[in-house]
Image (cartoon, rainbow, N blue to C red):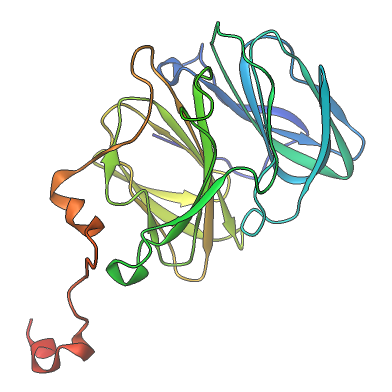
Length: 273
């Protein structure tokens, strides 16, 4: 399911997905918080919550801790992420340049210590590298998952796609609900995704909802870089660890996997249709 947003986000918190709305099966609230210079916002003590700095600079404070983060580039800089359990409040105050923050909430009765993931502290890796002529090479940043946040009900990270390349590839699925939120550079860029059996045009500020069993590969247009936030909600008794790859496409992960030769490399075979 695609949720398109025209014209950016106004000041304050803009809800995109709500647990008690028409997309309650996503089990998460998700929205964008926009603060002008010097403005502040309190997250409240209800719910498990994760706050990810998208742009600008902001001071985060919570019981027992504080941190000032800044971000000028989604593509080149890793995120600041604050994860808190239910019962813990946080306050965000924007600096001189203002700030934009992605906010995710979910139900979770478990208590855990506040977790701050600063730039450089999450896991960053190049996936797809060395196969398929680098057509699905991308940067995957994982802020936290089941391996290092077993009390959380969320898994959260980012992907950076270079122009013309695929991600969430090979096609895969999982039973846990997932949210993608997209930004493009330059902002007029676009991409395409397949959610289940439907194709969607992706634009700056769009959100995609992925439900149980829906495959979700995607590609960005030449000339434009695509960044997206991804957040997965663990299910009771079915925590997310890894996806299920569509069997007929798993071969692209094999060492040395290669696409068919392009016509200029096939000689006379390139003339055949």
